[in-house]
Length: 573
Image 1: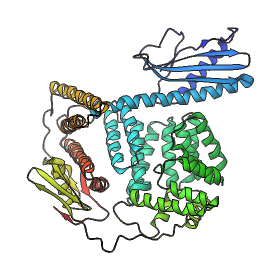
Image 2: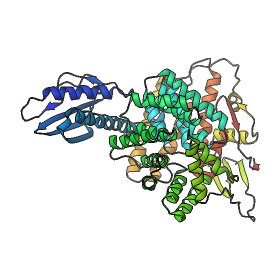
Image 3: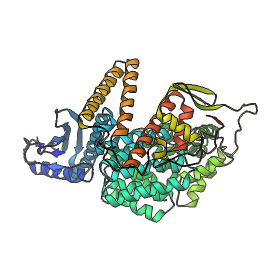
Image 4: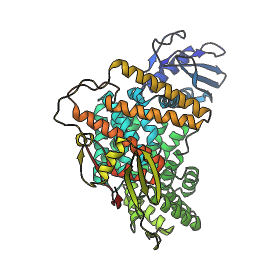
């Protein structure tokens, strides 16, 4: 991004020095975002050469009023990505300059990320540059499901294949395992905790100056109850970049867990100031911050503004705030909502154990001060969380689970629902894993490849690869056009062809789009099996969501593949 000199529109024309200083501060603060290469240019007629974005603006000082206007423009087509105007009383001129600088910096960074993500969504996965794998992966993580986490994990691994030193890919992998460790698959505690920590630590080793690596590593350490180490990394994150609103709002909640209620409140106020029109999920963090400082009216106000699916324990926190403000009846209603969320998102494959929801709450709220955690637990108990288990109906009959091939179709049955899918190799792989629960099967065995065999020539030549890429782009354009015109039939047909081509390319190309070279049979098998199994699970999830969710959580892929459910259904294979 090039930052060009701002126009001085002051009445006396004598404020050029202030405009220059303002731009210098913008450049310095924008440079804190390690994702941006920021270039300060010397003349308004220059865009600084080969750049993606240009930041321009003007400054007008009339009497005691200061107005700053800013525009972020795409260099390729001069399209305005973001624009802002700031009017301030200049009684404390340089404080005003600092304030405007911080807000502009946060908005510009957010605008660039939003613009890049929109472009990345229109591209086939095989065409994504390394940074866009991070954007797409983080976009998936915000969905908060095991299925989305698995898709995100594939993208982050793709980023590492393109660039093994890309620290953000390790951050993304850490977050996928963190989600499973802390909530979605929290029964797989040790394995996911270890992976979340290892990837966060690796990201920090690769880029110690990235505020986000310290944020993620600090959060993992916080949940490991390594409070002093966590605090050091979280403080370092804020010191490196106090203008990234999305990161700052997370730091606010983490400071609340650390028992630093005044710091948490100030940090949350800064995030809200940096982003005056924040996404609704900010309010969930603000509710935890307010609870930690005993401001129960504020906590209730914040938590009522946050979508219920922002955090599984949002309704539990809201119940505590309601009880503290004298509304016990509504608090009991919130506990029922929390139990529904818990059963749906945390233990979807089984009935929760007695007291399990309370244990989970204690796990996902890592307060350093035991009295803070006691306040939460006592609050939900007063709201009616008694740990009782709601058993299934006595007359409920066992449901048939089937996964077997009938001619060219696969018949699937799960939880009383049925679906039929066309044959795919990934379905055969899954059936084999289901037949051997808990056992690891090497990827070369699944694909029928002798791991000791020599490599083969490239699986696809350059000319064919180019043709494939062109067809992928054409199909994506067809999908975009059909969805815009609400032609769901046409979009569905194109999407199916697109997925088929992508799965075929995955077996022939490396994750970075490079043709596979001789001498890597195991790598070919690992990638091909992962792609076709995960692709088949996505198809199953679209046709039979409960079974898709079960397989997303129970099937492991990699060099060794396995089916490890918490409770093995009685499969008819």
